[in-house]
Image: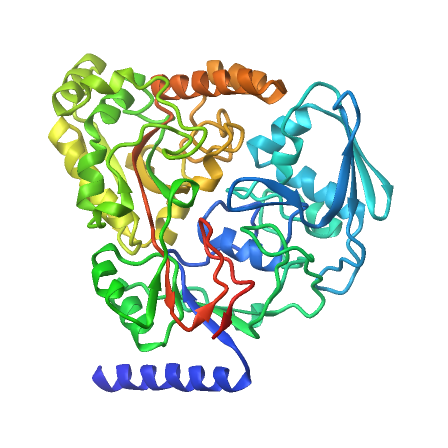
Length: 523
């Protein structure tokens, strides 16, 4: 066994030396493994990181939540705000060498809208979407919709990534068979070994914008020859590899390693605030008992004490918010306390009373626990303990995140392989607008595991989407949050930093809610 480990390490180091000889290479380890290559088919964060490397979007969002033209040269809007005319930048090409044309963008938007609730709302308000010429297309609304640009620049979870029409027209029942994008990197699919590594090279045909890079906007200038995403299930191994220089970046630092890495002069740990932070969430299966009952959902809502979850994660006190009940993230302009009065009496005793009122009789509650995730592992363990204290019969099923993500798609009863609760995390940048916020935006969507469906929320989201008045938008955003807390779409488990760490000889690392690999070079 020791000989095998020695040989494996030797091959890894030989590969590293070979790569360095070829030119600048960056090796990163994501929090979860890359399993899916279609950003319309999967909402897993590793797929999002992948998507922004090899695909591009019409509109990009910066680190402050503002939207800018990306693949687009720009757009014009009619005086009545019902007609949008978009024009692509010149010279854009797909990775197969063919030009990007307006027909591709229309097909991509239509495919995206079939799986993304924000896109579905936009298409419902759209009367026509048609080509003007190869570089221009027109979107004409049949009713007011105030967030057209926000939709086209939505950073996740289902990304409005552009792809050739021949692929976009294939439908959404399965992933597209090819990876053909117009992004700053090329994916070396022949070198992809799921569970081991994924390899990307600089796209020589990519034309970056002239503006400075900012979040997902601006010039995505690639200064590396190659990026490798390395899968390492063991978190301590990841940290050791970073310290030795065998890895250059960790998407998320294991929380108990933060003090160690803060003392290491060769490692930089990022600071995060507001939309750069993460919201920890317990998703609930609304289709199956016991969480098909709103009283049982409220019992879980009362049982989960964010202060205990956050304290139990092992983060330094400056890296989490002790209690955040806003679906728009705390410390942001959109944060509100609307609908939070119910939490004044929350706690284990209140949860027990609600369970009794719900008629809960000890039915199994299957919690899918991803032990390989630095973020999800502690949340799952702490939440399971709080649920047991409240009286839930918790059955924790532990595995890697890829297994959890696949099983989470099942609508089967728990006795037939289904699930009840899955801890996940959301990036704050996704939560600034109710129409993109996964806390509410997937209402009544078949593509959203959990399948919450609240008719009152449907009406609120529809009115919000049509409202151009900022004051009314703010009022409706508060009403949407209050309805969320009443219906209990999911349970918020706390807001925290998931700090990134990277070797200090890297410069140009862009602060954002998830890793982006353009603009980075070695000092």
